[in-house]
Amino acid sequence: AQSVSQHNHHVILSEAASLELGCNYSYGGTVNLFWYVQYPGQHLQLLLKYFSGDPLVKGIKGFEAEFIKSKFSFNLRKPSVQWSDTAEYFCAVSSALGGANNLFFGTGTRLTVIP
Amino acid sequence: EAQVTQNPRYLITVTGKKLTVTCSQNMNHEYMSWYRQDPGLGLRQIYYSMNVEVTDKGDVPEGYKVSRKEKRNFPLILESPSPNQTSLYFCATSRGGEQFFGPGTRLTVL
Image 1: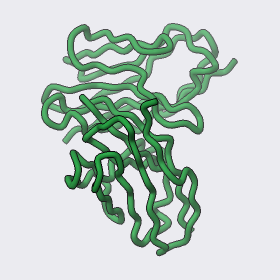
Image 2: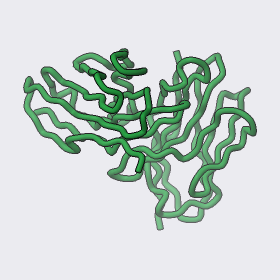
Image 3: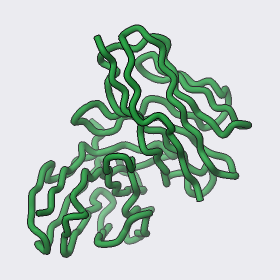
Image 4: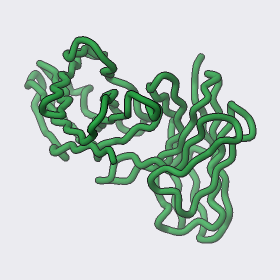
């Protein structure tokens, strides 16, 4: 069965600090990988996704993530965070074959950015 | 505008009183699903539907029912709600592996 681990439950940063949120998954086959963001009181929005090709993917709002297949990881990064990045971030994985629409989510990482 | 809508957005009810949360999408997607979000547990899939009249259990289906009589609608039914179903519920559609989420329904069962 697929599973997703996000080891950072709550991260607190000052504005302009760099961000890296960890995501590891467990699945033996080819995967699609996603990062979603949930701003306070809102629904989930897609930040970025990886299906194939360049393992370094760029998303909206200056976020990027790198797929490292050997480490089963898909860490999210941003060089300089802003107060408006305060949100909860979810990593998710789906099988690239057959069950591509069934997403498995990590438990989320809450990011608090202090002005 | 492409969107997923849910109603109601907020609901407080009592144990055992049947309720339905509606979900509708205008993107003509075949795949729809329901998730519940709980603190520290992330999002867990309740049910999903690959197409009209095709539904299947997700990870946490107990206490829930769904139906898919039309492509655009996928209601979530709680026949006899219990306090452990107090949660934030999201409907989603999917095409090509990318999911689009509704605004959420915050349900409190007393």
